[in-house]
Structure formats: C-alpha cells, structure tokens
Length: 490
Ligand SMILES: NC(=O)c1ccc[n+]([C@@H]2O[C@H](COP(=O)([O-])OP(=O)(O)OC[C@H]3O[C@@H](n4cnc5c(N)ncnc54)[C@H](OP(=O)(O)O)[C@@H]3O)[C@@H](O)[C@H]2O)c1
Image (cartoon, rainbow, N blue to C red):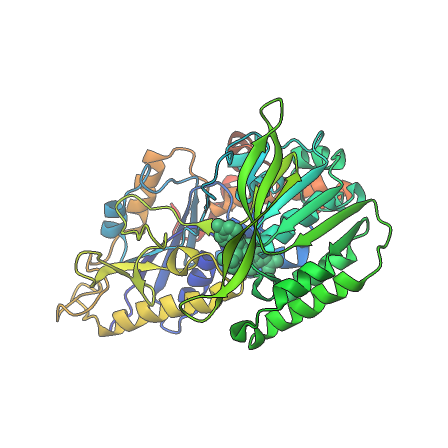
C-alpha cells in the first residue's frame, strides 16, 4: 500500500463527527485528510445546542474536539448546507469516503388532538431556544403567564427541561444560556413542573446522576407520590431488575417519595403510568390543560413491560407542555433513509443500498443518524471507532492504483476510486456556491468574541444566536489566521 492521502468528508460537526475525525487523524498510517462540513457557522452540534447550560463540565468535552480541529490535516467548512451548496455526487467525486454524522435533529410527535395548540412545544425547540440555536431564537415560550408546565417523557431531556424551568435567576446567571432565554426564564411564573412517564420508574430512561441532581436544586422540591410509585413497581420487570441504572433510579425515586418537603417555592412532580390523550385549549385558544389516561403495565412480546391504557382518566391544568419523547433523524438528499427507524440503513457504519442491501462504496454513517437517538456523548466515541474500523478495513482490502489513489482492483472493496482528488478543488467549489463559508478560523473569531462578552460578567460566553451576526464576526478573522483551517486551506 502506498501512503497517498485518503480524503474523507465528515458531514456534521457534533460529537459523532468529531470523534470520527479524531480517530481517522490518529490512525498510524497518517494518510487521512478530513474535511468537516457543517450546516451552521458554529461547530460541536448537540454539545453547543443540546447539553443543558447548567452542565458546563459536559460541555468541556469540546477541548478534545478543538485538538482534533487543530490537526494540520483537518479543515472545517461551516455554513454549508448539504443538498443545497453541495450534493452527495459532488462529495463522491471529491473524496474517497463520506461519513454522515448529521444526528437526529427533529422531534417526534405524539399524534394526539391539540398537540399544536400555542403553549404545546417539542422539547427539541425549547432546548434549542435556551441554548441559542439560530433555528429557535424566535420561539415564543409563554413562561410569563403559565404557572404549571407538563413534560411528557421519562428521559434525560425531560429532566433537562424540568431543571431549566425551575432554576433560579442566580443559578442561570453564570451559564451560557442564550440572553433572550435568560430574560424570560428570570421572570418565569412557573412554580410546578409535572414530568409524566407512560410506564413506571423502573422503565424510565433517566440516568442516575441526572435524577439525583433534581434533589439538589436550590429552589425546587421533588415530589413523588409513594402510592403511585409502588403501584408502578408492583409488576415485576426482569429486564429492569437486571439493569443497575434502573435499580438505582428506583432507589432514588423511593427516597424522593419519603423525603419531607424542603419548603421550596417551586416543585418538580414525577408522575408515572400516564399517557396524554388530548391537549385542551383554554378560552383564548391556548393550552389550558392536558387530559391523560392511566396505564397499567403488561408484559410485551419481547419480555419487557408495555403501557396499556385503562379506563381511568385525569386532567391536569397546564399552560405549557413539552413533549420530550425522543428525537428523530431526517433524510439527507440522495442518501438512503429508513423512514421507520429514521436512520441511514447501515451495517456497522457502512451505508447500505436499500434495493440490494449491499454496502454503497465510500459511504459511511456514525452517531444518532446511524443507531438512533440514544446514549450519552461518550457513546459516540465507541460508535465512531466502529465506523472508522469499517473504513480502515475497506481501505486495506482496496487495491492501490499506480497514480497513488485508492483503487478497487478486485471489485470487492468499498472505498471510492476517484484517484487523488485535489483538496483545493472542493474548497473552490464550496466558496463559489457559498460565499459566506465559515472556516475554523472564522469559528475561532466567533468563539473569541462570545467569550470576551461573557468574561467580564462571569459567564463562559454570551452566545451569538443570529447567523448574520455570526457571519459578521467570522468575517473579521485576520488573514494570517487562515492556517487555523489547516495548511491545505487555500
Ligand atoms: N445529561 C445527559 O447525559 C443527557 C441529557 C439529555 C439527553 N441525553 C441522552 O440523549 C438521548 C435522548 O434523550 P431523550 O430524553 O430525548 O430520549 P429517551 O432517553 O429515549 O427517552 C424518551 C422517553 O420518552 C418516552 N416516550 C416515547 N414515546 C412516547 C409516547 N408516545 N408517549 C409517552 N412517552 C413516550 C419513552 O418512554 P418508553 O421508555 O416507554 O418508550 C422515554 O421515557 C438519551 O440517550 C439521553 O440519555 C443525555
């Protein structure tokens, strides 16, 4: 094998994309050159726009990604829309491999009446709003009149949203919560947040530290009804009993159920065995209440417990509701997509042709768009290794052409065979189609600007939330800093 460069385009700059780039660049052959294409002018995906602002330690993982970005064989092209500024075919002709790392950016709907009433939101849009995602800057969340919010779902996103709704102004002040959200959250009238699970505590998708954290809030009590808790635990669940996280969650919830109130102003109420059936409008046509049906747990076909509705109903008045029932991947133009599971069909990271089931040469996938929206940030490191291992295996089974490009002598290998694509050619194409291209140097300017706004007021950063603002700051990058996008950047 010659040591000619192997050029890889990674689409998306969240944790999965960055771990993929990192693993490729650390490969001992030293042959990989990675270009990362990102829809927004800013990198880091869910670390910037999904991780809750009161979790700065989790966000500090970006230091690892910054090291990857500083690698001389890495380039970042932000503000590039796949399917608009660049097509799958463009990339196939400029790279040996493409890795799709676009995550699961959409929300899932409950499909029940009243779901679209004003006051009913997807958690994804609320999370994007308080985290300064440019797509959600203008969201209107009526925290100034609603006093109770209902959150549907028993995962960590539900807990993030619940915490953000009850954190005090002084707890929020030192965070990187978007300014527009800080103002509204500081004046919020919400005093009760009800988190509703369709199954029981043992089946919840919370992780232990996130559940424990609720008990440490400075101005909110956690309320669990012991009778409801024990009713939900009455049906044995062998899967849950074998799961250490589930067992610990049950312990934590039992301790909340027996804790006396700490007399705080606000409360988070954790409810179980309830599914919303209707979002009911108030006299102004906004959300006024949610009707729920009580469930019982019954064994499902695969042995786990399922929620089965009973005849009992309950109505909870609430001016706001957030559905936190998971994320969903969205199709990329021209790229195979499995509508049912909302992922790109793949075998250990190799994208599969839906009509033949065979791997598509040179196309790979990683992260949530590969396996669905599950796991924590670190899960993507291992997941990226699996995809990179597939690329390495395909590379080693590929022949090598005389011109130094990656070849496919036996027709059996899965890497593309474009010879030795010129890195300058794709950059010229991108710049021609998107004059407002943001390089890593441009992002560094945005980063520096945001930090400089935050530093005097004791905040990690003040986020820019408008694309135009980001582009203006990115454009102020000094010419000498272009090498931050790697020496190959023209
Ligand atoms: N701090 C952190 O580490 C952190 C923070 C945020 C997110 N995350 C991770 O990000 C991933 C996504 O989190 P997530 O909270 O969006 O999803 P999730 O963990 O998959 O939880 C989704 C919840 O929604 C429920 N649900 C699904 N469909 C429903 C329906 N039709 N009606 C009622 N309930 C329904 C599920 O119940 P069933 O179990 O009954 O289906 C489950 O309780 C997870 O892996 C999570 O751990 C981590």
